[in-house]
Amino acid sequence: MQNDRGDDIYSRRISIFEVILIALILLVSIGSILWVGREKEQQSLGPKRALIYHADKLLEEVGLEEDRFVRLDGVEMEIEVKRGKIRVARSDCPKQICVNMGWIKTPGQVIACVPNEVVVEIDSGDFERLDAVAY
Image (cartoon, rainbow, N blue to C red; front, top):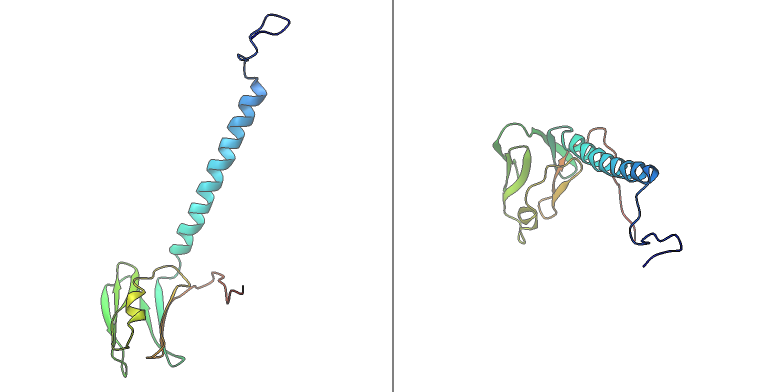
């Protein structure tokens, strides 16, 4: 199909403005993806420790750099630290929900064992986090 001048209307050259606009959009998109990834990595590189509470009292601060097992006094519970992550490896609670929660490693993540009144929390340091979510 041709227009009045005899040019093919389906073949048109891209102007320099369009090339610059496309390049600018690509740069902004790639930059924002890298920025978000960098923030997430910085957040995961935050404080490398976990706080273990029993009945609202801080029992122990556990460094996550060293692999080890932590046994809590007065509670039949074993907590495992491995490669910067922490989990409840064994517990005597009836439903084993705390054990099934698995590993946590990001600041602000929590494992709670309600029957034993134990909370394991990755220290969030200076990072802001949500106190609650309402629907």
